[in-house]
Length: 547
Image 1 (tube, rainbow, N blue to C red):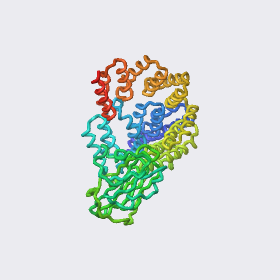
Image 2 (spheres, one colour):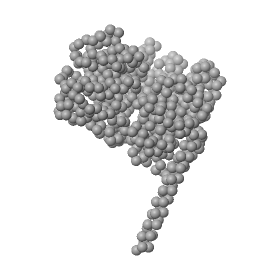
Image 3 (cartoon, helix red, strand yellow):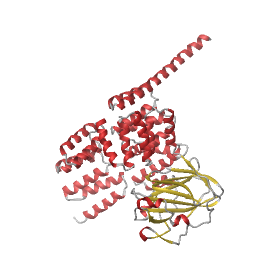
Image 4 (cartoon, one colour):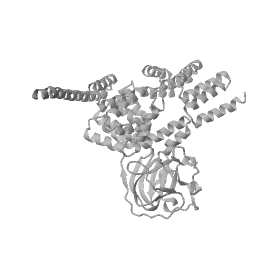
């Protein structure tokens, strides 16, 4: 019997030890890859990450690093294929998905790269993070996906599944010069009297009015109802609860935000951010009966002003029994509610990862991307600076800083960082693209041509190369080259509206006919049901009638 046990157990022990050794070797290779990235040796970085994966196919850290490398190299399809392994190997893949949301969403707008778009997102809409943030975001994506393709009924089905509140009274505009309106208490914060007229921005009469309809995606877009900028706007409604209910009130905005429940301030955020749904989540209680919900949004530095509100349970599901009204209701004024801010689940996850393993550099990039996707520029910049303390010359972190600076409107820092990136790693396609357009702007056409040629070597026939080449030959007024490259770009990327519009414009100018342009616009509408394309097609029909 002992011999039998030994015959079974010894091979198993050997297998376990072998796996442990391979896993340790894989981790060492990941660390070596990041050391190579400190020297910006892209070939070595890729080789080390690939070797780490070969040693341990379950090492999600290697997939994260490799996906970031491919993203930096402009290899979006490779980045996505690599990222999919993270979803399979990480114990909790949802924070990674939140962090990489922009990349995933961009890839899935191109079905030629990822054919099973709907299946991927429908699974996510059914089951994702425990708090339900990604489920709502997946429904939002699917709504936009089908809206873009003209399947409006199906699009509406997914948008409705977000469960956003669409009944509001609005009031505005109120003064907000240099964001001064954020701390001013305008009349809507003191009372709710729909028939009363107040003095608004520049003496414009301001009163409450109901909105006849909202955007298809249920974002309440103030620019649909007001022409003014540098202004503060309000949204108001009443929520009926059949009994005292513990709920989460979840808000996303473009603009600064103050949110009041029963005249008590529950959220305030001065920075004007363009963020997504559920950016601000507060756990609180709705009192039995009617509760007043007031949203204050201001914008003076950004070009959008909107908000979305969802009321859910802790899992992100709708709360049964609630009713919404815009009519005045009796409500408990300042009942002394408690308000507990719920941190973003992905931000919290990567903060904990950094605390536990401060030398795992990928977590700094992942946390920064969580911040930046919700326009938290300062937080994103700070975590990237922490990463640079550990790896001062790693081009990845300098590259991500550019987005942080852009969102934080630090334009001088953007320019100096691009130049620093060129010194650190001139083989990054976006660095070459940036330098190309700077050369063109400064009429340094020889240098621009050299940058264009190098970009073509790194990313041949990429969208970026075609766009740069069209710009270059337009500056040179080489019409034949423009026509040739435009045709190539449109054939390679028939889903691109920019290239389609260029090809249609050339067709109009060279044939003195709108027929070919109309065909191009009609084809585009099959892929991208968009108001701009519809308007362009209508104009083409009108002009064609004159011939």
